[in-house]
Length: 330
Ligand SMILES: Nc1ncnc2c1ncn2[C@@H]1O[C@H](COP(=O)(O)OP(=O)(O)OP(=O)(O)O)[C@@H](O)[C@H]1O
Image 1: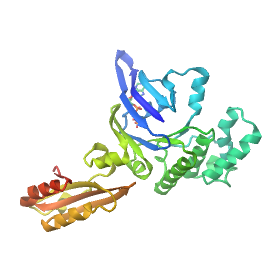
Image 2: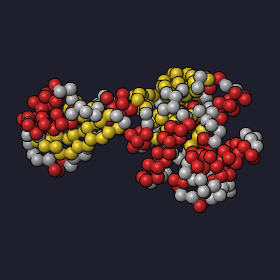
Image 3: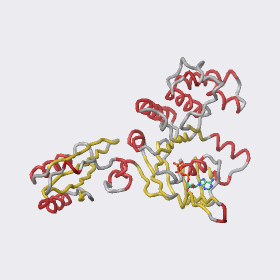
Image 4: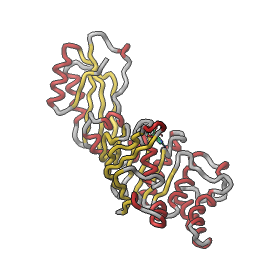
């Protein structure tokens, strides 16, 4: 659905220097999937959004959305391409003087649709986002989560092919975040829209993304389905998605070494049980651990406190079982 091919974006800065904001970015987003784009501040996420929404053009490379190369569009074709992309912002960006219904109607009015067409469509969208009876409320009368629901309804008004969400939950508390993520999944399930979420929250990726890209200094560090990136427990995204559990050094007995054990498994394969059995048989303590199910993948992270003299032998045995283990750096 979305293909970025060798996308490069260079900004000139004072004094003749330049900043490379995107450097040879190539990635693919499947139709109807939810794709997360993660990266530290300055990684190039906002630049990528501006290029995807055709507000900015790459210096080189191509961006293909639904079969159309948006980097070469002009005039009416450009406006049509922009209409095929709905935007959801961090702080909803609603018009304060318009009701929820008025905000959702706005893009349809700008497009010149008739009142009789707009009214039922707005009600349908309000129902979709669970605000069927709040169409007459102004943004100031709605909670942050409800305002974001209106933002999602407005973005979906014109039946976009792509829903681009820029930090959609960063301004929300935990429970509103979960509700908004569930809503985005429901919107995708019912409309088939392809969703791209820019976020710095790994929890968002764990919760709803089918695939993910990690950007750093304008380059793609890793990209793939969540299952693919988790299958290599040592990959940068796997480490970010499920970090090693923290252990207070003060709690460790002297003469012990801390080993980080990382594994992924599928339901029915007792990898976790094998690791625990081995650890117990060799006198290791589980200092901390997490087991998580992400999609159909089970991910385990254990911090094992092992007697110094056993550490090499345990590392070897774990590796023989095909399980990644490493000594934690002090
Ligand atoms: N208009 C511009 N002119 C010059 N440099 C720019 C411009 N826009 C962005 N940059 C630079 O490009 C790089 C990527 O910036 P970008 O805003 O895309 O990162 P980001 O991942 O969105 O960061 P954040 O999470 O902090 O918003 C940064 O080094 C930034 O300083």
